[in-house]
Amino acid sequence: MKKVLSLILALSMMLGVVSFASAEEALPTFDKIVLGENTDLTAKIHFAYHRTDLGGEDGKLAGYVKKFNETYPNIEIEYELITDYAENALLRVGNTDWTIMGIPAVDQDELSKYFIPLGDLETMSGLYNFVSAKAYDGVCYGIPSTGGANGLVYNKRIFAEAGITELPKTPDEFIAALKAVKEKTDAIPLYTNYAAGWTMGAWDDYISGCATGSATFQNQDMLHMKDPFSNRGDGTGPYAVYKILYDAVKEGLIEEDYTTTDWEGCKPMMNNGQIATLVLGSWAYTQMRDAIGGNHPEDVGYMAFPITVNGKQYAPAGGDYNFGINVKASHDEKLASLYYLKWLTHESGFAYSEGGVPINKGGEMPDLYAAFDGIEMVEQAPAVAGEETLLNELNSESELNINNGGNIKVQQIVEHAFNGDMEFDEIMASWNEAWSDAQETLGVEVNK
Image 1: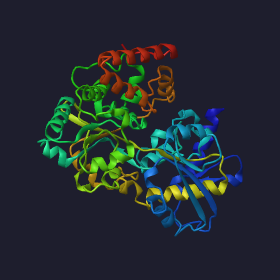
Image 2: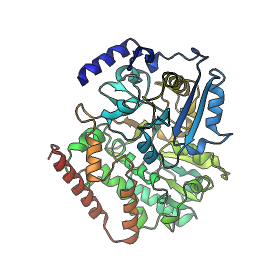
Image 3: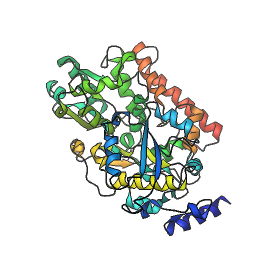
Image 4: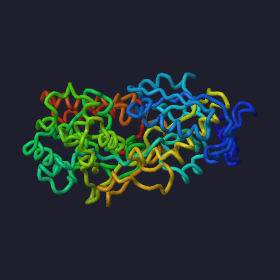
């Protein structure tokens, strides 16, 4: 029955119409939305979003809404900006108190339970980057807000004062650079952002394409891999990523008291040269550059993560939260949401202004990626058919939550390194054991 429904939906999408429970709820697919049509449409959109830095009466989001309302004056858009977004959105995804939200970590096969289909994946992938992340059975349910090719934020002036003339390309070179910063400047070499919690989940972003050069590592290969967190002996793989953090803490190359870090406060600190490096996605670059209280935006730079695979550096490329539309919203609310998301994607310049890789195919790259020349961007390949939910199942069973809000395990690396009560190899061995136990419990075939 499920396959029959999928075939009906696919046929509807080929015609540019998505059919729901009744004829009066027929909607165009995202690619068929034409901006400038239906300008008399009246609806209210409640938009749950995580970018708290863009709010306020004079914030960027208010400016986007004002510009959109020049064409669609009767579509009211109310943003709800949420700090603990990942958990909050997951708790509320089944509710009716939102119209658009950044899609949280729901299982792929449950996307249709909460979000309307935007179009078939083949069509959408030909037009937009990073849409496969929130697709299932050939149907796309989300459009990315921005894209990013992740690395880390650094202060160019502090690097120069520390005598760092070339950006580090390996873990050893990076640790040496942090030591030079500590010896020759007053800046914090690596700011962990431990206290915020969610910020530490960023380390998971680098274990796949960046650390392996492979697009299939996270969603396909690792699921069947024996001991994926083991030392490869060549400064690559997940082991090498997390060891950078462990070594930085152990060597005293972080803030004096990691429990008192301040997420909002770190932005002007990076801008003013009090911090040398921050491991965060490219979305953070503009926040550091434009920080209130920061007087040196020209000093903020963005560099590739310091791992080299067979002589080449890679950058994990992907979308930020994909926007999805509530399947329980009214017809007019859904249609209004389609127009607003189409406008954000095509007319607002949002992705570019936020330092993101463009969502539209062939869009212009922002200046922040100047240091990425010669570095290959790797977009995660989706799971193979039949294994769309396996990563989530392994994450849940192992409690490692790789790229799924797994900041607790990364915080524990900081704690153990600082306290000296657990060696790094012991931590990785415990992760391998948890992963292997999860594979066995779930009956996953393991490649020896």
